[in-house]
Image (cartoon, rainbow, N blue to C red; front, side, top):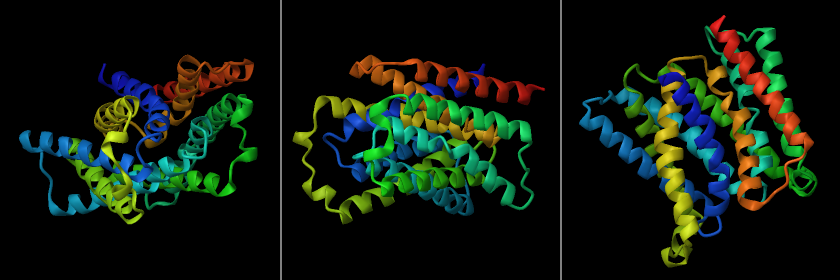
Length: 291
């Protein structure tokens, strides 16, 4: 039951983070938002690891910090920065390219395993479904979006893929909580420094933060950061990174569904068809793993 539960967490919880980021950005600047959630989440995970006597050596601290920079500065920081102008749906579909970058990076690394043609076809089907679902909402097409933001989000996907590949190789067995806490703390600390450098900290006033933004921050920190990232790192030690990365296909559908439920957005035929393609892709990958 642990494996399906962990997948459910990264599918559903991370699917809701796009809406949470959009709501929080109304009151909290991007780097401060992502930095504070990472520092708090990382500190709690490190405390749990310490009380559980699951500490790691100095070398693992360095490797975890490198992963934290790639995952949280290179991806989460850029995501929040770009999502000030880019819709959550478009951001989600661009980050759905993560499995392809994982396959490319994994194949290029020493001892890396090249993905088979069936796996590539299934990944392509999933990406096509996500694209169809998101672009089916006319207002989410990238015509009015700056190409610089699109390039940043593609770079964010690559950064997350690199961090994922290294985490899978570097995270010690039975030390996933400590590794996650270090990565979160390191990435969060750099994001807070970036926030201060950009003047976000001095211009931020806690009294101006809305109740909705506070709730969104708590969701991002407790569910999106602590629970989901811990499940994510644990899954990387149980199954292949490409299979774990299928969450990038499901997350945009969750984001679109929340937009329909919370914001009253319409769900058309394109989104329904896209959802079927995503389900087929994920189901095929899971069946291929069991075969």
